[in-house]
Image (cartoon, rainbow, N blue to C red):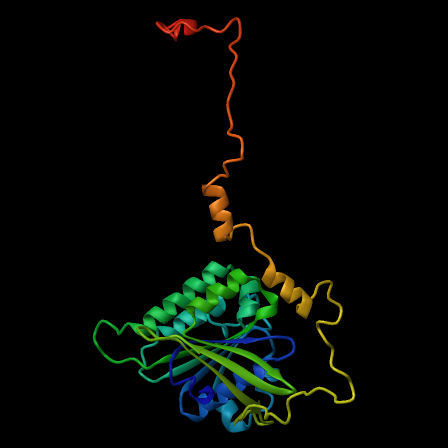
Length: 301
């Protein structure tokens, strides 16, 4: 499923961490798009153009259109090379294209944009882009798909921006791994369909080709050392988990207070004749008002 992310279209969010970086996967998807003959635009904000192009051969580099926002993000030099409006303006301009071919736009990265722009501005732009991609133009002519690949360093942001970008993404890829082998948890959301969740193991070759692999085998999973005795979790408890034979017999012979035997019912319902009956003696006080004609006279009604 990892090799077919670009065929789905929409926004693909690549979530990486310090332990598992995602720029290599971003470059692998960019190379795959370039080999498929798509127009590939790179909005570089976080690293230089030379660093991003490093590792690609000349054929792939010639197919990439790099928009450098790393050296001059605010276009202070006025060289005319940068598109107006910054990275978001360039994103809107490429989505409003008039040609019919598919295009892939790689944003490196969303984290840089979140640190320099309001989160609401970024989310509104991405929502507009996804809405334009899903709605055909007014003249009815077909428009190629727009694939937006965005790298996001999830450890740099709180739950608010992370949740907002996740809700806008049609495909969300969370990088992880174990024992040195990288994995990608792929969550796909499609209209009127149930979301799909799949984990794909992979590796990135030196030429940024994607190599899909199987998960780690059972033999390679970490196992316990037979020379180390297992720890008993019930060794130092302050209470007993089981009853002894005498304690079990005493529990079985105990009559609970809410259990009425036949003898107890007979003793309660039929009192013995020898028992003395109870009487209530009342001696009125000297100031008690015992007027039976008007018993409420003391209330002054």
